[in-house]
Length: 231
Length: 218
Image (cartoon, rainbow over all chains, first blue to last red; front, side, top):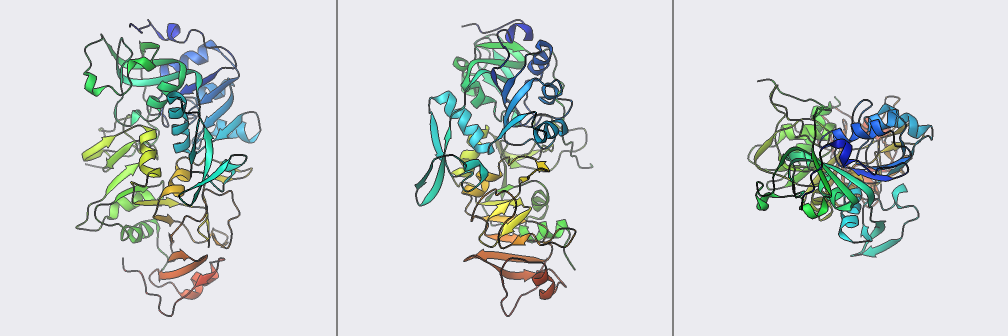
């Protein structure tokens, strides 16, 4: 089945105000930067965004925060973004902070048809407020529910026209789980090849989870913390 | 003399054991990787999805797709692997990682830890810290004993929103190594030249002081 769409404009057709969107990436690593740029252009508002981080002030999801398109963020860590912190502390932005492992598992569960699960993470903290607690193996666990989204937007290294995806290094992060949890999943890739060119043994995300795939026009791939040693 | 950040990292590195998989948090914990004792092999896990982390890359060899949980550019060692975030936390929650080292703003004598939020002032989020402390068997906290105003962060009870309850086993500060057992801090070692009186004065929580408190050997 051919999932290829021409470009980012075509890929994001149907995204409207008030929708819930999952976006892959960890920090600025493995984020769907072409799609984020298009979301800014579309000007869709009141979005609920599920993403581990919120970008930095002038890149990644930070761009959607600057343009006040996000109503609510569901994330685990938002430390590198001043505008985010300002909007959150002033109450303009609704924020649901959840432990990173729980966020990953909630997306995985959403895509896998598991409505909820128990985890020890967050027990005894603010995160556990209002959640069912059960003891397993002598240890308290809290009930976390699955997350799904109207659209999931992921970024992969290579993809084929069937929607099969291969990620590179730590740019994989949240992308595979989110790819499974979107009603419509959009993949932007650096290299798009005809079906049959990728080795089936090496596929990370099988094409069944992807509805639209396109080759991103430009990948800036900004580095957040450039750390090097001298030769 | 009180230890600097590298000194704290060096002392924590002495806790490493051969064959362990270890998760290092952001800040002082990251420095532990620089002081692996000779003759042992450990592998570092970073929760964003890499096992077998190596040194920072040489200038010009950075790869935007290869970072650690602190978003720093890294390299990998032979035998490294990459995985998604759900798999990463399966390693952590499933207790396949033998040691977690992380920073803290406060710890309490029953092993509670706070490190993610100062209400009304700073909210960075917990990242992976809550998953790590809820599951790890062996958690060492690397932190500074008291703040700049001299107020202790080694407490009877944490004042900040918690990251986890009853989970910290050991605390290494610029002044001391302490174990948490039976709802009390137990002084195990002191930094070279640091007096027991100084440690006592900067520890608000209940501190058990044995007759003999050796100096750290770094």
